[in-house]
Amino acid sequence: MKEPKYYINHKLKPPKSFFDWCYSQIHTYKWSNKQKTILASDRQDCYVVEKRLTKRTNLTFFDKFYSFAIVLVTPKRIEIQSYCFWSKIEDGKQVIESELVNFEQFANNEHVKVSTRREGEYVYGLTPNFCSGGAYSGTRFYHNDAIERIKDTSELRYLSFTQGLTIFELENIYKYRKEIEFLQKINARKLADEVMYPRYVYSSWSCKKNVDMRTINEKWLRKNKPFFKNSDRSFREYELEKRIRERNGKVVPGIEEYLDYRDINKIPKGVGITRFQNWMVKNRVDFNYYLDYLSLLNDLNVALDSENLIIPKDLTKAHDNAVNLLNQMKREVETKEYEGRLKKILNYEATIDNFSFVVPKDLNELIIEGKTLHHCVGGSGYINQHKNGQTTIVFVRRKECLEEPFFTLELKNRQIVQVRGKHNQDPPEEVTEVADKWLEWINSRSKKHKLAKVGAA
Image: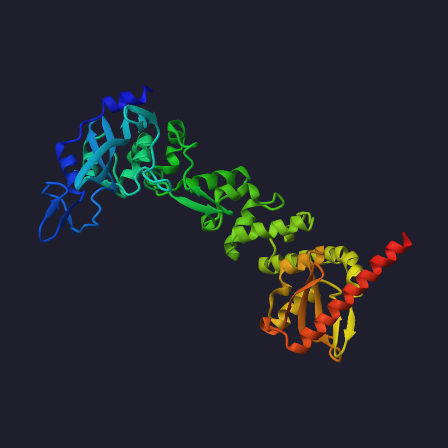
């Protein structure tokens, strides 16, 4: 590959009509009052912005940035030349500066990209028009029948563009034009379109192209010509059939709707691949949901040593059972972790006047409290913070109804952060007063405890 400047020095020359069109897209200004008129430019073929001329009128300012591009075509070359224009007003006169900023060339089996770093200096790659955009963000393309010329005149003239052609598809089509031409000649309709117009498909939490061009080359195409010739078979169908055969199975009709070839290696070995396909098609299994089921079994340390586990009769029921079992195990672990914390906060319990202050004996009580009072104390955030000692949740109950949620108190750094009732209702005055008494009581107990420790020392 030559130096970047070589390509700029030997680029195709755009017609004068292109630059005339560019200037026609750039507006100019006219300021006037009863005594005077100022024209920023004498150009006749552009839009004129008319403004009132006053003593405060600013006649020196930066106006606007423009980006225009042209596509030029010869039998052996396709070029995209993008020019930037800067319009500014100086003492009421319009000054327009322009520069070739981005350049692309498709020729000699190469796709060259060059951009201007500064006047006379060029580097490989394209420069974005804006910091958060691309090389052609906001660019207007000159209408010169370039697309039709590409189809009829360029190196791509032997291809059939079944879904049309845009400038942004040129890179892929030029790169794989030989593969596309071969596929179109053998009438491999589906695969030819997939290579020409690649699309993204979703599979097992990922997004990948529907064709893998690391696989498709001249040798591969000739080897697999019988599979694709005169057909609408896709690349995914080919790979799916191949990988199913590698597991000593046959393709079950309709499986392509439920299974991607990239998922074959995720299917447990303890079941026949043909039987697995029949189970998927019959039960219309979402493979992502199935993978989540397998992940749950792995978290539970359940070995996939039976067909009933690998392909359960009712996947939804099996999935839900695994979720419930895992949640139960987590609760058991959390309960053990909470035992030490509970011992430290049990001394917060007290009955003052007509109210009792009760600490949750297990973490499930927080969930019940939140659901009953319709506030967020039952959420995982509060549960984890209470369990870890970052905050303390205390239930305020009527002393004659200890099992009935009434108000919920949050204590942090020995201060009451909030007291909330049903639907986050503020507490009445009597609850606020008794909560203050309770806080004074636990803080006084804490001071006595500290003094006792000092005396013992």
